Image (cartoon, rainbow, N blue to C red; front, side, top):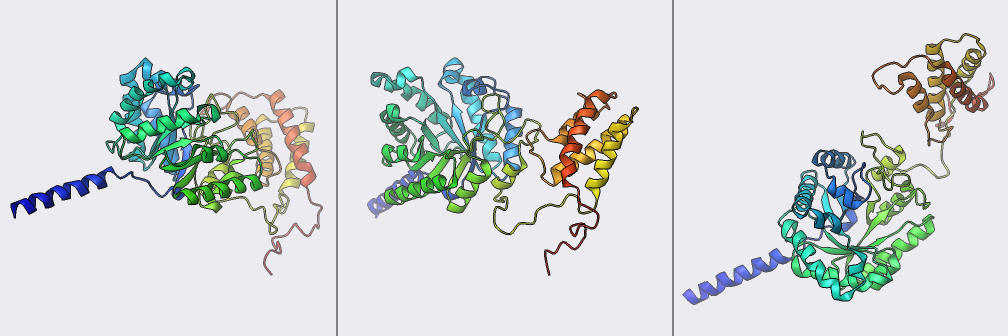
Length: 410
């Protein structure tokens, strides 16, 4: 009996041990993620060398407000070598801060090119990986969601990326391993045998190509029995609008990570959602993150800015103000603000530089809580531009669109 009891207990430990070693792979179709670098920094090494706990927590709070649940963050070999203890402390803080907010962290590794290009040097990365795994891996920190073994290896570093992924899987028996492939075709070339979840990036410039790449990725995932995610989407300069690419990924039921949460000093001109003060570049991005998209279908009801005569009266007031040889500063600001509000509310102007911003900067100057002194020479061209943009949208008296019965429902 004693022998049987010992055998049963031993088998119990064996089963528990096996279960503990299973990789914790989430439902990747539900990933709503972002790439993350702090706004003031230039480059990923600087992000870690100038790491701020308060700033990180503030940024992750922005993400939580958008119901984002994953963060992909580049970890720097340079920062690790320069101050190993500080780097690992900062990484731990990020993982824990993310976990507290329901945001899983995917560290994405970077390596010196001279190491990845020299096969004899590959074992050097083992110490780097071991440090990371010993600090937050193997279930030690529940906020760790994935290891991204290599970002966009390309053909030249494909074999190296496979090697690194293998090392991660050897040293961490709990955390899923991925590789951030540059495009879908590279993901297939990388193969599925060294990763737990497939990953590709896509900055395609039209919906048809985005859809085709998603379908190919899903077909390859089904063939290999692995889940698939898109680790990078969204870039203004690459004709990959956030609302377009996010809509396609939402519809396809595939998890995604936008590039990127913050408007940074590195990629801020073409990527990013939030400024450090919590304001946003474009509210349509916020809507698309939450699954709401602009109506591009047949049934739309265009805005009529002059439906109640406000365009006509504002244009008349603006012209009178401009013609006055001694105009009132405060009155001019009020008219310009009304004109700017009409232009923006009816979507009559591009929002690259919102008209209301220019009016408010004149009203407040550089001091947000103090009124600026009158500056009529600066206000006049703003008024002139707003009135010129608004004037074509006036409706004649008696126009049928000047009514509260808009004819939408009969």
